[in-house]
Image 1 (cartoon, rainbow, N blue to C red):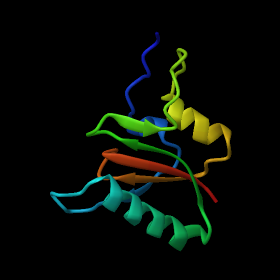
Image 2: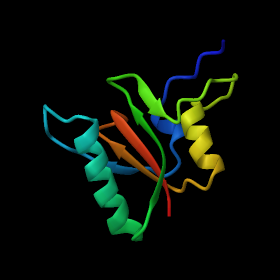
Image 3: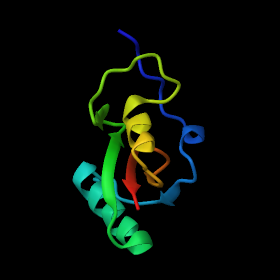
Image 4: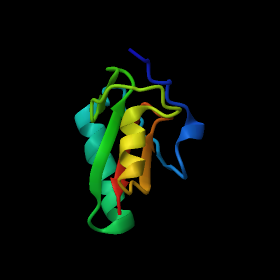
Length: 98
């Protein structure tokens, strides 16, 4: 089984940074903030994928096959993902299609 490469800032094309100062920030609150910011930027965004570094989770949860990008990110980019919300320096990443 191949291991996905760890996410780095350089992998994210033109991310929109969102800083949230909240020690109790969890996935739900991060997603709500990302959804709100995405709606401000494009009205009706469609969430294609997400990443939660602390929990080591992502969606879609697809196996890696030796790609240069994590599969969840590759999945979204190949399906028109063109709005990336990066919360707290890749603690959470949400990829939308505008």
